[in-house]
Image 1 (cartoon, rainbow, N blue to C red):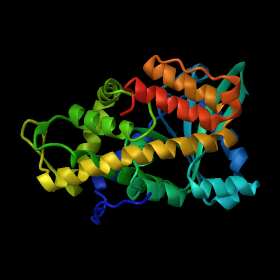
Image 2 (cartoon, one colour; image 1 turned 45 degrees about the horizontal axis):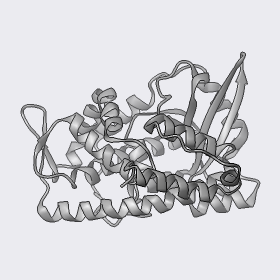
Image 3 (cartoon, rainbow, N blue to C red; image 1 turned 90 degrees about the horizontal axis):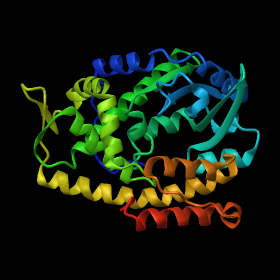
Length: 323
């Protein structure tokens, strides 16, 4: 899943790293530490970092949803006592697991993805598919780091994710002048289409508005290494500078990502049936939450999750959710 597009060799802007650091270190609800402690216990000396992202980022009542975590490990061999889990994580990272912790009469739930520090760095900068760089261009919190070296490696990876996200998204745009909300809405919409995800453009615009100040800071900080594809105007808007050849190549890449994403989504769903307890119920809940489409899980499909994945894809394609 490495990139086939040019990757900038320019040093990361100091302002971008500073903004990533500031956003990653913002305070979160105290209950997140309970989940982090459980992850530390589970992975012990293999653990490099724990990152919080997703819809629970600003939550105070964690028992009302499922927290999204990324668990960064030094190696898959060290992370697992079960050899098959190490092989699966190496073959198609990340592995996804379910975590449930009781605390003061509440049940805290998390879905956590396990990936090595090296794969996380590669995914943020070099992967062709946006699975990592689309998620981590958006706000996240670093809840735990083994040491300062691990912390800085995560910050650098997050900075690369922002640059990769903006470059691949903006290169597909016509020459025009647009504001921060429109830039991030269009880029997020492209990444959603590259995965088996039910979010529509309205979801992308909602996230762009919700995080507008953060996105404005990140875009401005990343601009020094993106001057070939956009420039800032006196109004504070940005002008895309893409050529016809650049747009043609970028749009072809996004078409390839959409097909690649459908295959990868089915493979990951299949893999999750081994690692993630109740993965089908979670996936069905997630789809219905974002689209209103109820997808029945019959006993036969529960026994054969791959068939369920194909059923989901067919229903979403037929109803125009995926294209």
